[in-house]
Length: 372
Image (cartoon, rainbow, N blue to C red; front, side, top):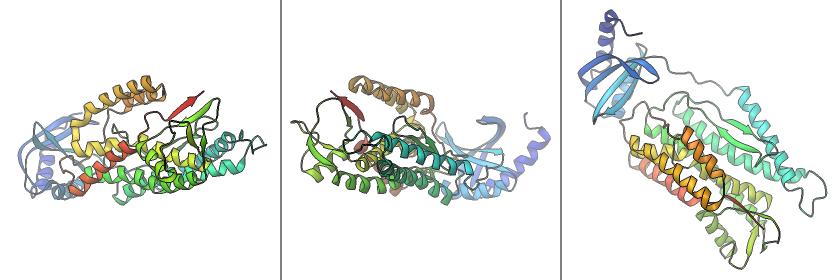
């Protein structure tokens, strides 16, 4: 319900005291819709100090009276929104997250053991060594990725859930990865970028050595006749195989590397990282793009939807249609920080640009295709 007139005077005094040293008010009004809050107080004016410093000071003072503070730019002018609410509390990782991790580990182990059971040297229906050789490196990469997000978020006192892994036994690769939910917006773009970048970088620290080791245990030779499932190439993956084997693979004369199961787990780590770096919505790449360009990036999602749909038709990898649908449903919403005025400094701009470069290097236009 609207804020009562008698209360407005008290709130006005509280907010004037909270912003006095950092923001000169030119207009103050009540009952503005500021989703998800129906009744926010809106302050127009001019900042007296840099917004990064002002946000910490104003938020600390306003919190004493139960306010959450948001910095926004509207019609080219800075404004402050104040809402009476309490920030969500972060809690220790619940049992559900731990249980899901071990269920996913088992799921990936079973999938790996069945995936390689048809090898000529394997006579049993299930190869537990192959299961371990697949599950341990892949889950190490995924866990490093998610812990990168989680630990950096907690270091910055961001309200996030623990990572929830998603098991998918006997289908695909044994897992759909993991998700971490932001329970509240980050403080500013710098914190958002730090959290977003930590996941892919931490995952790659493990994925690249695992892939190199796996490739060193793989054999190069003619592509066998009959139905063969071929892994996709990215610029990075092509370059790595060229460095290790001295040629572009697969070659024009039908030579390719037959991946060991460890190499396949490392390749999967690259694929998962590339998918997370798609620059849309609340994917890691979407966070990087938003922190660089702000609200101007919203049309990019529609461009990516069209590009993925076109790519599905060109490559006949129909998984891109699923991703196009997911981007349409979820990729149009970006994580807008509470302080959306403080820009990235130079080192954070370079970090965001590096994340987008990683996407270009790791993206696989046709992740899986069948020959024969």
